[in-house]
Length: 469
Image 1 (cartoon, helix red, strand yellow):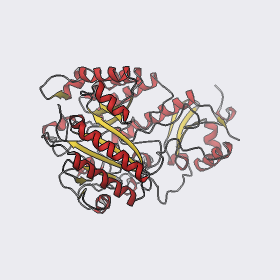
Image 2 (cartoon, one colour):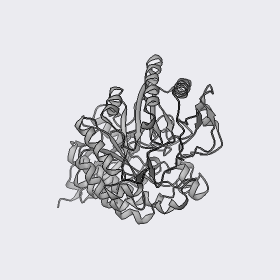
Image 3 (cartoon, helix red, strand yellow):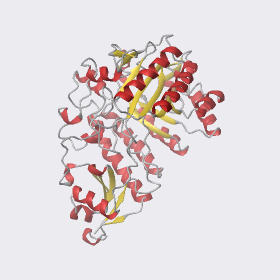
């Protein structure tokens, strides 16, 4: 084997080629707020690291490692010689110099986005074991939806956002598809009038996607995110239909219908203590079908009751790592570094795990505004307010979304600017305070290195190396 000093100083850089771009699935899962939206992704008083021990660095094999260069928002695979010759800051400068200019930001969402959860209905045709939404026949009217869009646009303009991420959600939003389509058409007109970009997604259980429904969504460029937690009995065990029948067959038929129509959905996976054992099989199923997906760890909530046994613990780690081994077997040009570790995202540095309380509006069927869809017990504003987002930001009630650097146990962690500290709602629900580390911290610490190593393997396979002098 060649010794390190005889190896060339090579780096493989994320986002530096057409086959290595980061997908940005903002809004595809039920709590995927835009983690990177400025100014909340800015790392104030962040000192560029001077040693490799200060940043996430993982060995890939005997002659390669992978590391995150925070001030470039890039993941790089590199040889031992690079780590011997360059500090992280100096390597960032060398990469920019070799490429003649800073790399284009392929991984950062363009512009400033305001995320909006339009809770179109509480009703649903499934009865999932872990759901936090009370099932009742309460649906948003078209008139309320129009006023909600107007309120959203007012806040977006007031705070200089240029993009609206609209999440049509519930309950099952397709049970109120008339309001969904009406709201979207009105939002599209408002966005055009005020020069805003519109990025919509419907968060559905996937059982009601008829040909006509798909056509209506496709006509409006509304992305489709489908909840799927496992195959066969695994899905059916925690996502039953309201009449007690199974849901997996219905979802699979919808996936086949979407494939036939040339529509690419996104799959949102909720990981519970029950389903995590079967995660490798689900990964294999999705990867073979070239379906994008993201992981969301089950979060206990005020209505969990006897379902608290669904919470994942350290016992889930071997199963998650086994699922990541399946990803390695199906390694593709598409990066998964932003979707494999719950709320963590290694595509860019960020202060928060989500944008709740900062750049996020949740609007219920009555037009009341909340900070988070998991905490809809007390509203902080309404769609009649001139600027609902200002009320959300100023409210001291409910969720307090603190930056990772101000959470005890997080301040000295080398993963903090990519983890963001985890879900603030869950942290407070389990630990009784917002200013501490996530209950999933031990799981994160075990899984993060494996996720980063996968990205390094992908870079070595699909990205051309750059030589440094």
